Length: 183
Ligand SMILES: *[C@@H]1O[C@H](CO)[C@@H](O)[C@H](O)[C@H]1NC(C)=O
Ligand SMILES: *[C@@H]1O[C@H](CO)[C@@H](O)[C@H](O)[C@H]1NC(C)=O
Image (tube, rainbow, N blue to C red; front, side, top):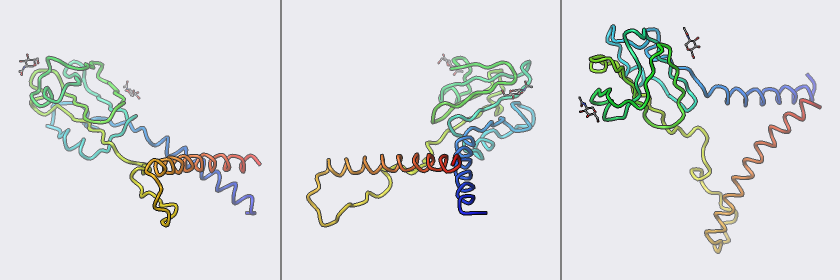
């Protein structure tokens, strides 16, 4: 492999790596896995949810027999007390996919009397995971320690510019990768 061949391969790895990272975000989670959404077998939905790291864009799939069950999204108090009288949303097809669009708790229960009480309820908690370190968290680089007269607004501007350059640098790297592939 020649010099340009190496860079071409490197560029492809960079591009596909970037695509892979963005594609891998959405995951379909079937509630209860092979058990599905049921009261049979006293499946532990709390334990099931505890083993997952839900993210925005993920799909929560409820599969069940619609003659015997349903899916209701409810408030936290209604989830705790198994109150199915004021659902936020109700799903009844037996193959209901719900795409998570926001952070925080998403409470679901089966609205058939007695089912929630016997454990057919699940809390899908989407944590505010910091996948990319934000500029505010990373230590602020001091341009010159011998210049103590830099006003706070100036430091803020430098911070903003550094963040902008970082973003610009990233897109330029991707752009350069494309150019080297096309060359
Ligand atoms: C369920 O919620 C409704 C409305 O908030 C309330 O009127 C009712 O008493 C609740 N039922 C139970 C069993 O808590
Ligand atoms: C259930 O829904 C999922 C996701 O929408 C879909 O991929 C699947 O084919 C459906 N299955 C049935 C049996 O309808």
